[in-house]
Image (cartoon, rainbow, N blue to C red; front, side, top):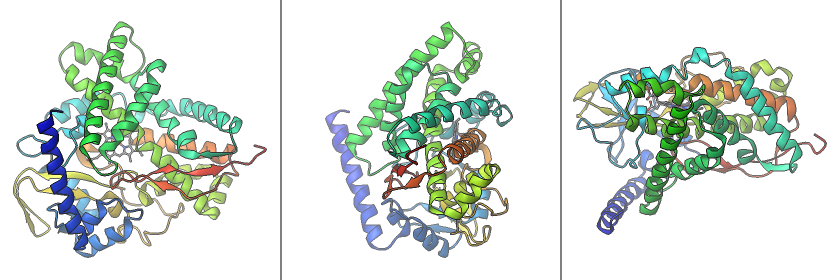
Length: 416
Ligand code: HEM
């Protein structure tokens, strides 16, 4: 970045930080949420108490109400970009691929991509995921009795699956996933000029790496997403400028979310021994464990929509370009939909749709795969690490978007 750009960006960040700080000191629950507290749930309740659609002192409209959130996500008068096509202010510059596009480009790209991650085509993945889980657990059993569940297990599985899905050769995987960790500053912690510059550098490195991988696949096609999309690249339905960010986004969106689903589920089960016992006795409860974890500790806590025209919603007039924070982590605990929502309960009857994977045209393309990974991982842990226990305090990620951990110290049985 040029020096004057750095100074300007730093100034904008300082002004924004001051604004958020002051609003927080005055008790604005959204400003407090942006400080990424360990426990965001009381703030969600404060927001809910203010009504289904309420405006933060920061200008963002907040939606914690399950019904209203679903309505907005399905309403085509809301998009993901400003009306002039710009990204929303305060977002770190990153090409979000599908998630950063409104129709008609979104529809074209999604139609091409859905073929590779079609929920109907996910079942053949089960055996591969099972095999990889077993290999990972073999390594855990051969390693120290005490370990960090995040690095030894939770981070490994989604990286492997996405690598296989996209068609990343083994030799590139380690570097690629090092880059995703650096890019997670997009959603973690306080933005600073240094972090933003590092995100830009790692994004450029990742894009260069995907350009190389695409060239490899052009020389030798395989059974993967890139190879699947090459005909569209050849006949002009897809451009290289779209395919590269798509691969980068799938890497980020497919790994950093699923890691937390697997770890949050394991953490919650260990914290509720009677439910851990019930699950070990009946591994067919795996899908119920995943469903309840998606609700109770939603990995992606919030996402954004922007009004594409002036409109009235729930009695409130929203000007064009209004920003809305869809608080999925709050909507998934809406007491109108989920009785006693603050209780983790894997026997909860399957209920209304969760907001964990969004709804409407941006509904997560990897939802079926993420569920499958979670179910297989949990079943493997219950079977092969039945004595797993937490042995120290967890450390959460400092993010108001992602609900996850960096440290989850556990121990397995020493004879295992
Ligand atoms: C537990 C794991 C996951 C969670 C919680 C999750 C969550 C989400 C959410 C909330 C959105 C939509 C955000 C919005 O509406 O603004 C989304 C979109 C998306 N996700 Fe996921 N995701 C997960 C796993 C995956 C995986 C494994 C993949 C890839 C295989 C993936 C690929 C995508 C893509 C491509 C989109 C954009 C869809 C579009 O804009 O049309 N996700 N995800």
